[in-house]
Image (cartoon, rainbow, N blue to C red; front, side, top):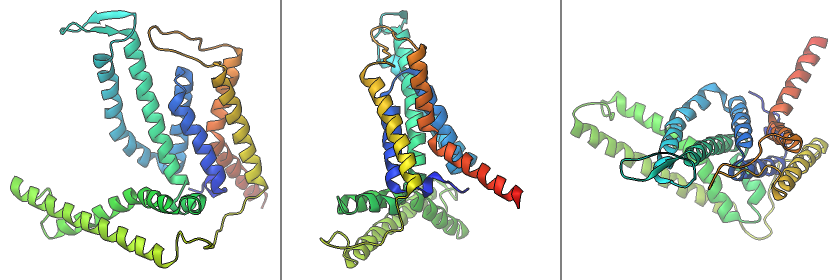
Amino acid sequence: MKDTFSQMHPIVNFIYFVFVIAFSMFLMNPVCLAISLLCALINAVYLNGYKAVKLSLKYLLPMIILIMIINPVFNHEGVTIITYFSWGNPLTLESIVYGIAAAVLLSSVVLWFSCFNAVITSDKFIYLFGRIIPSLSLILSMSLRFIPKFTAHFREVRNTQRCIGRDISDGSIFKRIKNGVKLLSIMISWAMENAIETADSMKSRGYGLKGRTAFSIYRFDKRDGIVLSLILAAGSLIGLSIFFEVVKFRYFPSIKGDLFNFSMALVYILYALLMLIPFILNIKEELKWKRLRSSI
């Protein structure tokens, strides 16, 4: 699926995700958490598709449930005691609510990082930080690419091993362990060899040398300037609302904080609009193309 936001300048993409991920991590207001999770899910579905998001949630949901259960067991802060555990520690309403909020925060941040990986490619990352921190940017770029490449190569190697009867699901328990160790050895060898080849290739091209020029396909145009201005304006206003505690909400020692008033409603709307900028741009572009096709 064509993504308009991904085709914009890397600086616009990066600043957008800095604001969005930072706000998602530090704004603990329940309404803001819900907005962040919903907007992250919408953008993730658009960028990665239903199947990719479904697969992510498959592994994410057990962790979320675990956090919701574990937090009240180990966190006993709060003044509203519901009951006592058999070992004497209290179960408080505040710890339960905070556990739910922490689980929502984690899930939204994970989804936002999945969107980040889909938009900020390794080429964009090197373009942004290659001249400032060349070594670190190369390492981070390789790290971003490593997981999808490792997964694809793992499937390929496992299918090959399955064809010759050496898969981790074949034979007795000892044979499965032996096949698993062999498969792990193959993957580690491939990963190390791939890293060395990449490092040698970049070194032979003079990567990181002082005065080295680099070709770039990215051009900052008028549209990038408009979108960046909107992101900076919305992010700054939300930052000011946080500074002046407009959306302040606390969980301990007691749950306290308004959720709805006029000023907070404005912040919520602005917050949702900021997080939905990529989706709005994509929908706008789709409607534009449909209009142009219908006029032909």
